[in-house]
Length: 131
Image (cartoon, rainbow, N blue to C red; front, top):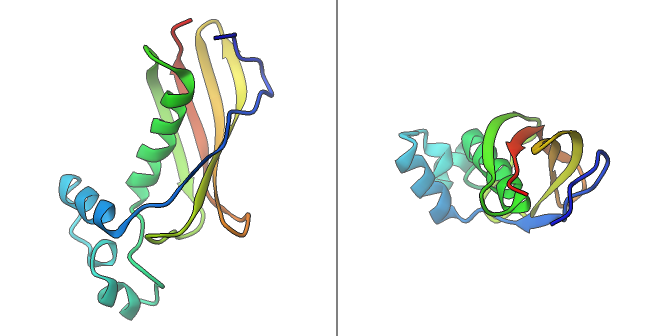
């Protein structure tokens, strides 16, 4: 694997969270808010489906960054901001660009985009790669 350079784009990752995944993530994260697992309740609150948890967004941007970095990579830090709501079944795309490189340490500028191209999540992931 070649060393990344500032400005390099990581391969995009498309995905969608399922209602079952949201239910399970709520269970393991002790998040009992019904908008994350009860479609009827989510609709009564004005959402078109069960809502992706903000912490699941953080887990997803971290996991995709670690997958990009390869075996032996370590997560150093993650920071994200949810700028729009996503719901189960909605197609999302993870995009990242190398923002800084210091030896094996890499900082990625990450974004999660909705199907219409609007941002859902923005942030950074710092990791150490094993070269």
